[in-house]
Length: 65
Image (cartoon, rainbow, N blue to C red; front, top):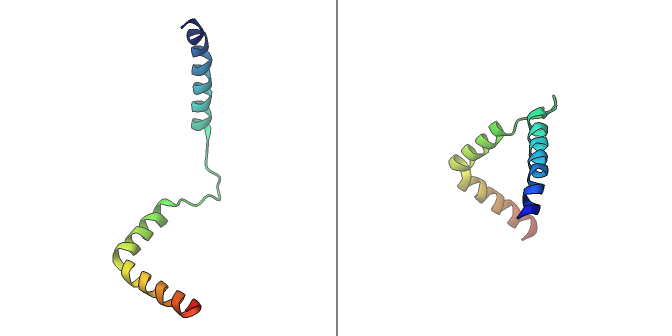
């Protein structure tokens, strides 16, 4: 058990460094938030999912069938 006690401060220091790096991170100015697009895609799937699947199936069958 003694080796574990000696390694614990090192592990804590590594975790603290990782947390500091995460807190300092800032997204780039050209970054696009994907949350709104994900929400719109979910609504699209809920409202028109069956029609989209049918249209895709028709297109694939027409191209490859």
